[in-house]
Image (cartoon, rainbow, N blue to C red):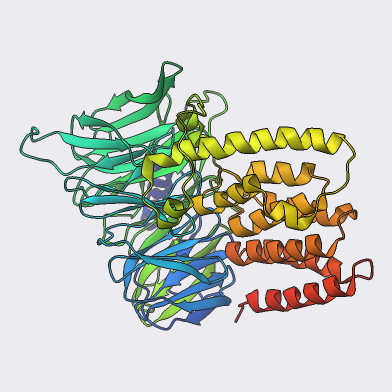
Length: 600
């Protein structure tokens, strides 16, 4: 009887402890899995050891190995493609919203690979690159060295290069207006608890130096600004505020919370969330804490400790569709973070799944959680194991447009003072601030040409010859838009092509699209499909140019859905409504499309 009472008392105490812990952690009930005792859903073998964590893509993930091999995988572990990189790779990768992959080799080489595993270009930057590349909002790429910042177009042509004082280990960050914040190493001129930052325009202009009241150890960009974490545990939020009188804008510090998070031997990890929030994972010697702040005023939305998660060298954090996945050497937790609909200023954390990770049974180096709910673990034995842990949904990525930089182009256009676009310098690169007047000039000329075209289309006239259009100086200049290597001109080119009714002019617009190739929003491919379906433009020159443009866009982008769409467009030109010459040309292009399918 006494033993029975003890047993009941013990069960009651455990139940109370569990209830109190549930309230303390704010996570509710969950089922703990153990991957040491579970069979993996799939496995595959790499050609070497993974040298960094797998990076997520829209189709799955990519892995880089010390065997100089980059591999693309589907969610189910199927190997889609492999490509040997040129030189010894550094241990970081960058994947852009369009699934372009940037790999650094031999310390200074920047390599761009598309989502089909094709190396599009490789350039020697001339300095050691010290972190993963950062993509700007119109496709341009920023890279950082020990004392150098450089910018490349998506075509591999360098736009500018800037030498600076020694740079800190904090990565480059994008501010809400598209400018870049560069963190400099402390100097003797600064006080011990101060740090200097440099704000750069996307065109390489030094806009301002700022002195921060503390040493930043982590930072995270978001739509409305930038969250900073200092070595004291203080958190601060800043953003650029501009006005008609101050187009460049000024860096304003919106709020500051002293000693808000842990700062121990492990650097805090900052992650961006939806609904105007940013989270921080910080650790002390015994535990990890997740803190979530509202960006607008710094209100603490939630703060809770993660059970059994302590600071280790393998801390992994990945934001999900509606929360965060966090792991260390021993376990992994995934939280759903839901806004309290009553207060709208609090977040309710709930564990969606958690698991113990393999230890002795499968020694591993890196872990990643994919957009559709697969936990990917890279083992020390060249193996990758995949575990389906949750039925998640795809996380939308940041879109790439040229609109965010419009305020930099807002300058009065003066024909007399304008600087003519220089084709040779565009091809050579390092034109820096000249990009602004050149873009303005071309956009102005294209707008004028569009107005004239509208008048010409309204007035019925005899079609102009293809030879005459090919010599048109304005159209030849418009072809220079491809040398900028950004998404600035695509919308305007598409508008002109869809408005055009003269086959010769239309053929030139199609060729300009082909030369650009970069189609992050799919505008050009959509336009080509509409032109093909119009039916009135079945001249051989137009159809052949259209086939070329479709293939070149799909080749550059490497996107599988675009490839399928592109093949459908070209396949339509094998029908009897087109000439035999067009039929044969389309079949040859389809043969080239078949070679784009690199699935192994």
